[in-house]
Length: 307
Image (cartoon, rainbow, N blue to C red; front, top):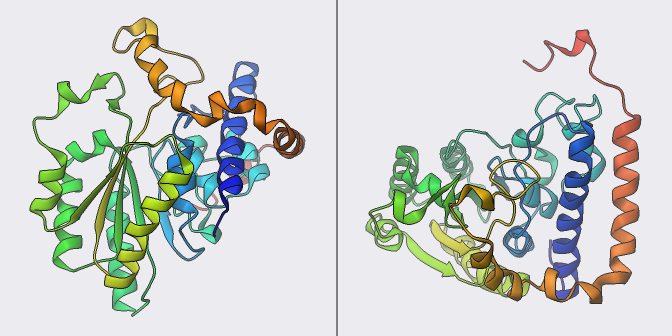
């Protein structure tokens, strides 16, 4: 899927407005699962996914709303899943943290940190064995996942077997309430390069145009060479770790520290320019929410299906 600059902003704003609606709905108890919101991180998902094909697979994590929507996941079924309805992606039994839409290349999320990284590597190995060239397999994770053993094993295996994996680190500098300096003694770039994998970084993770352009270069190189690459994109999480609120009262970060990022965020400082497309997006969200509310809950007979 390819986008113009205006299309990138449309998709970014659409994701933000979807999550703003989630925030409004959450206190009503319509939403039946915890939510890890992507507000502030939309440009990462939009910029990267705009360079991917339908048969490129993305293995997301529990903060996966943005990637699910950017890759083309259907919106009515998204809201139905969050509301625990039978018409949801997984019949209302998976919730926000386990989104999946294989038909558009979203191959599922997990609430366990770093657990889907090895799945992306395994899928890339299977594609190589089957000689399915030019496909990309994206492992999407936060900077906290780089501390897990499976991350290191996956880098080593992908490099050793020359697999077309994009290791995509969505780096908001936080793991729940802990900053990088509290968690990591290593330099991530040097660590990745020690496995013979090219390391790339984008500091302007608020800019969908720039993310699209620079991630496109990395993705094209993976397609051409079949070799893995690592891309760290700096970003910022605006809301609390889990839930619709803010968490500045916990003291691990300050509102002032967020202001510099907000000042550069086009969805914040250029919002007045998007009034026309806001109406279009709102109508789509309204229809999706109505679909979910009007949908039935799973029955007792559904309990043991798909197990």
